[in-house]
Length: 386
Image 1 (cartoon, rainbow, N blue to C red):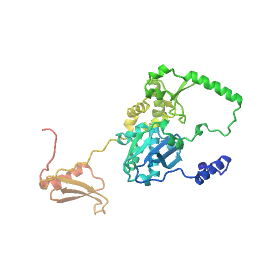
Image 2: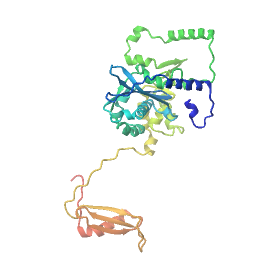
Image 3: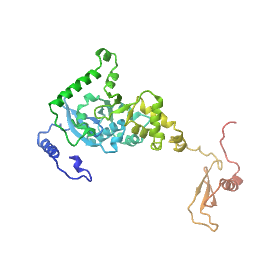
Image 4: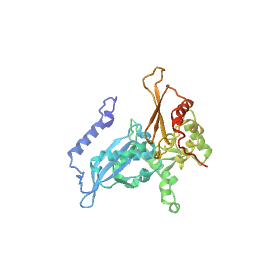
């Protein structure tokens, strides 16, 4: 039903909308299964994200030690959010959960946030933050929480909110054919061939480490093409072999070519990772972008600013002088609209000199010699070496 509420959408109430509406009414009329929040007990949050939706739950342990649900929240992702990298999508789900459950979590003692993305445990302490993460960091700082990793196979509750069973927007069709007996027979034969082709022998599987065994399920053969997908909801991507020349050609097309536009490493990675995959792809692209000659020559350097350093305290008169210009004043008889100000930092004595709208370095030097040096001798200065 949420699709009908979008802007510029023609209203067309169909049977599936009526079924969804009846399901909502039934849920509202049935006995509640949610637990009333108990502020004397700690809360914890479970969140998850897919390619098209966000889901999260607020939970507590009751007096009998059972884990109970206090509230559910979920929503569809906006078109721009669907283009986020996986890391930022998981952060978006965590941010959405904290916003929705703010009334329970703000000011709470340390509570736990469970996610199936292990890298979020150190996201707050990372010295390399994206612009989006830097904007969200002040929001996360309002809460006192600790991120815990919960494997996806155990994160069933949040998965149910972000991954609706039987729904995959990449495979939606207008008409769904009803399979007959012949279709079932063909499907069974294909499944049998699939198991024989992709099965791993037990003694081979035992030699592999657990991360390697988990990673095997992400690879698949599409004919003679090796593809990679995190789960069934992720769009399969072509796996690029360990060929530096081939990888360089791909990054060149997505970054150096006119259609690439010399984007930053985050946007270049987001564009390239939609279609291709290889191990340590993010670091590979970041190194390429940082070494791009055109980017280094044209783009401004995002270097950190030096910290403020106070001037040393003046110990005597006219040994330390500050100078500055003031413009935008009424014109005098000679058409000058500015003033060059010399201020002694010890006794605050001032010398003023009228100047034109444009002042050269030689003219400023002459005014300094005439107004300051001629009357007060040589000032102190600092130099390196002997």
